[in-house]
Length: 252
Length: 216
Image 1 (cartoon, one colour):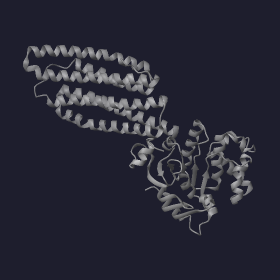
Image 2 (spheres, one colour):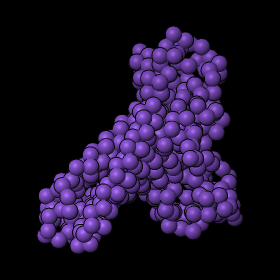
Image 3 (cartoon, chains in turn brown, green):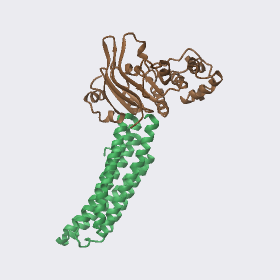
């Protein structure tokens, strides 16, 4: 059995009276790419945000059940939210670099979390940029504004920005939806590199992307996990009729 | 996953396809050797070994289906994966023909062959060369080699025609020779079909490389 990175048990989530997630029992393997697919509003982004407690910011949001990350219940009262956010990094749909230089975008998290001394920054920045294959392109322009980069480079930078915090898990919410097909393939290739060290959970509307880029796929519908399996099995022989209908385009 | 994974999978499929092709060539050659010696034990082994080739065919086909489902190949990538599926089907059928020859060896009675084998081994060697060429042309995407190999099929057809006529005269002269004569006719027919399957592969190579389908 693969090492499990994230495990949810009887997870239910409400926004006020609306139940967005129902009885989610999920085991996400470590150092693999797991894709969440499903029609709009099925709860896949909500579920992703459960894993680093981003939903805490939403008024009226209630979470019940258990979410274990590396065996620790992240919704336990004693759970350290800052430590959780270090461990679980997030990359968003649209690249959202800070309006700072490339260098400062990466060192920002180090300063906030006081994870390194200033003189260590250059080495850490270089390592992070190398991980996302930006170093060779940007090494001579580290102090240019991150906003001047191409969209793909900005998204790579946003991934690089998370890495110095030494996360174990990378959450990606539609990370390629603002990118063209070639840039999308580049980010997917990058995921294959990153999964050697990180557990990756990606939410995508793009079933082709789930097929290409993930090892495991979960199909969600109306807040429930309908089926989770190895991606090749989900796309060739799903066991649930709803999954079959969604994959084959009968609905959604 | 993604391009690097996809290319890696294609190379892995190529390797297994060539391995399967070499097994098919070996099966054809072994079946003719077994026929020459009327070696029933070897013929039984050839029939049993055909299962390995069948399994390999399903394994390659299954991997192609997975590539369609997860990688959504397009353009030349699409044609290449489609071609893999077509090739394994053709190779598997060639192996069935070799098995058919082995089955005739098993059915043959203890009397010697109707006549010494001269043209059948020649036909077998040309067919095996066609299989090998078709695999080489597939791997190197060599349309010229594929076309030259298709031309070799005429030689096989001519030999089949010649063997058929010769065996007919034996059978007309001596009705007791009919069973053994029919068996050798079937051997020749199996070899002729193997060469046709190699021709199919070569036609598929043209489709893979430039998208043209020979509808002739």
